Amino acid sequence: METFLTYLYVFLVGGFVCMLGQILVIKTSLTSARILVSFVLLGVILEATTLYDYIYSFAKSGISVPIIGFGASLAKGAILASKTKGVLGVFTGGLEATAGGITAAVIFAFVFALIFKAKTKKS
Amino acid sequence: MDYTKRNIKYNEYVNSKIPKTRSWPSLFYAFIVGGLICMIGQGIGDGIRAIWPDLAGNAVSNYVSIILIFIASFLTGIGVYDRIGAFAGAGSIVPITGFSNSITSPAMDFKNEGIIFGLCVKMFSIAGPVIVIGVLSSAIVGLIYLFL
Image 1 (cartoon, helix red, strand yellow):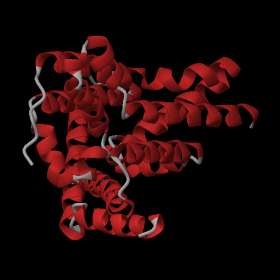
Image 2 (tube, rainbow over the protein chains, first blue to last red; image 1 turned 180 degrees about the vertical axis):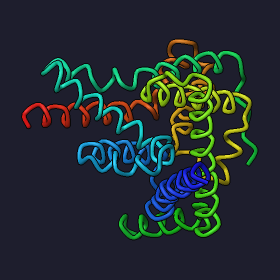
Image 3 (spheres, each protein chain N blue to C red; image 1 turned 30 degrees about the vertical axis):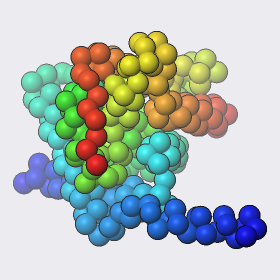
């Protein structure tokens, strides 16, 4: 029952975040780059105001899988490292926390771009 | 006809030609697809936790991101992710899979212009600003917390 509730919250919160993005697409015709940028910024702000941890306590992957989670772990890394390493932490913390995701994205993008050919889009 | 008048007419023409996204169905699809991707992420995380119970929570969420990025990159390669994106809209952009797609997709499209100047340069044409803004704002937040 508990796992069912968790997955329900994951679905509802994750879907709601994506729906917010879709509302932005419809109302302002923002490009996908601008949407990604604004959600990363939102994640950084949510983490800085500790609201992210509150949402994560019940929504789990519903808030960490959207790009908001990427922004939040950037900010979390920078905050934690600034506490332990001082000024150096401000520079190293953010990317240290997200290095796995960025490196994975670069490696897989490089490999799959070499393997596969771009298909001509059918309009 | 003076320029301003012509520009107004031209803009009206352009606006009439821009494909309109139909609001309600696209909101629904974005909700469903986005929610499903997040549930897949939760499922992968729970699976990892079940197999390796001693892993720290931080490591688990890192693995989940990496696996989701791998899946999205592969689906972009075989052309499936674009088909999902065609009806899901932001439901396929906002999750971390959309970030992966935004790196793989231009890398594939510009491969013909060479490995360095095509693939490697264009790879970050969408993800670049995301990383720049993310790093910049998180460093500012870190700096603020340094003085708190």
